Amino acid sequence: MLDWLAPQAGERILDLGCGDGALTERLVAAGAEVTGTDFSPDMVAGARARGLDARVLDGHALDYDAAFDAVFSNAALHWMTRPDAVIAGVARALRPGGRFVAEFGGQGNVAAIRTALSAVIERLTGRVDAPGDIWYFPSCAEHRGRLEAGGFAVDRIVLIPRPTPIPSDMAGWLETLAAPILTSVPEDLRARVRDEAAALLRPVLCDSDGNWTADYMRIRFEAHYAG
Image (cartoon, rainbow, N blue to C red; front, side, top):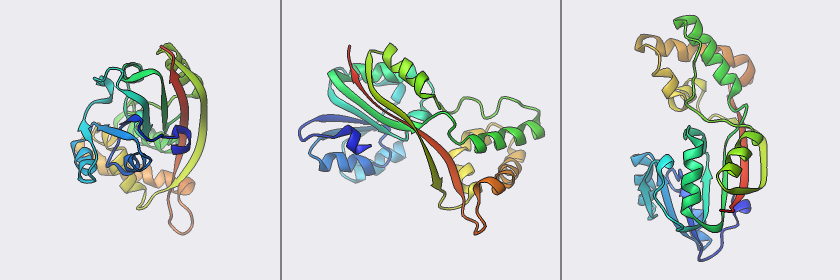
């Protein structure tokens, strides 16, 4: 990701969805002047604790005007379910010719996990719409089209399989990263949905030693704002 961005000393860079600032620090170390934004006050507090310039801001409502040479985002855009609004805000924030480099969940991301959750929720509640649209996981063709419609020239865009070890277990992953899905079902069913989904996933995503792996697919792109 950082190689694709190739941050230069003196550049102004916006880190969109900066989290606790771990990657933002590396941009600063390269000599760039970096502003981080995140929707989570706790994450922004963590970034500020590192001495970074960070602010709480909804990625759908960026309020910058030709302020940055580049916008960078890692593992955040899939939480922003109105991508056209995000792209429009990034375009406004960039200077002419500025670049947009990002990586996030793409088509097929956590497909097994989503299927297991859907199956359990449908069986227990009759709902057929879970997990709904809490994430944005586009194909390369879809996201390229959105970027181009927003005034960007796409230099490269790829879909990357990235099976990722889970530090704890699947129940913990579901509690944290699928929380919006769990909270969409009645409270008395949430633990059951979590546990039954994890049980369905065990033969697919857990090895004989009890180590879990999430079935991540990432989309990565580099684009320039053409205006």
